[in-house]
Length: 399
Image 1 (cartoon, rainbow, N blue to C red):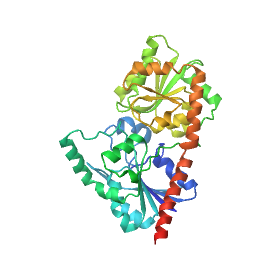
Image 2 (cartoon, rainbow, N blue to C red; image 1 turned 60 degrees about the vertical axis):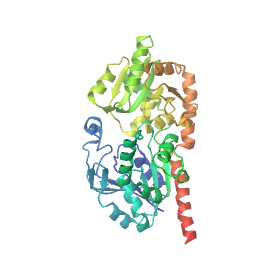
Image 3 (tube, helix red, strand yellow; image 1 turned 180 degrees about the vertical axis):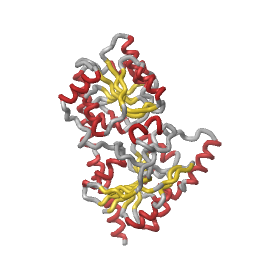
Image 4 (cartoon, rainbow, N blue to C red; image 1 turned 45 degrees about the horizontal axis):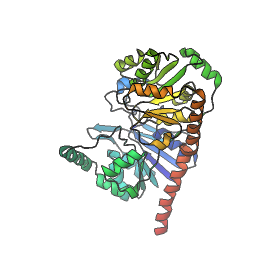
């Protein structure tokens, strides 16, 4: 089967779906092409230079066709408008590659609208993943807001998208609710799914020598309990809530609890993290370097938005703490805790509940096993292929 994956942007050194999904399909002996723009991830963000430039370089990169072991990467020139990213020459790529299946990301993108419009012309099946979590989606709350919302959606030809996408994949229950209630995607066209983990990289196999060395280099003692956060240092991710919780724990005598923040962001925000007692910040690292960071830590904490990093940390055997508005509770059942959103003192209480090493190991083992069984990219790709072949074969039978 020939599979075309379309993503608005792409960065080789990140750990998102567009990085691992093409490889997962390729490992299953499918012909896979990833078509994207010449933009790095988050290239259109006003915070790009502060948060990502140090890791990824300039927001634009070179165009061309680049083959690797499992898939072919096609980088096209792009244009950015108030409505989003337009990948120039996308239709020509579709005509040239003639895919059986196209997989894309998010409902209300210019690329998705174009793929929906071209579907009948080029005779492919179209599948769309959605990540519209409640933590990042603000539904219209009044009449004016609703009017603007639907004017914008008409620009994205939303009805045509709904009609022509064969299946939508909301990655969590709150995403399913948002796209069925606010975007009016029919429930029968949806299949609840999840993000996944590259378990060849992220797993519970520890290198004890590397772990000991890493902790010693950062000044963490054997008895210290390290709470780790990885990602952006920005208000929308709110790692400062964890910093404040660690600072508070030090004030009341729990100086053996430490905070480790790996990522990047606004200098002012990062400085607020660095002045919290017991907290250390490190810059972004490559995905291959993250497992040792998770193995060297004891608890994973993501205070606000959902993140793929939560699953990566679970795969490495860490218990997870998230806020009480996160709705995908099945993911964290038995291996996670929830604290009152924006309440650093309640977060501190939850951290104290994980002081006992045996409890952390028990919870971490539950999470690592769950990832291996349900959330690996290998399992994800196998399930998707079954569905893709069902659509293709049913069509052939009808013909």
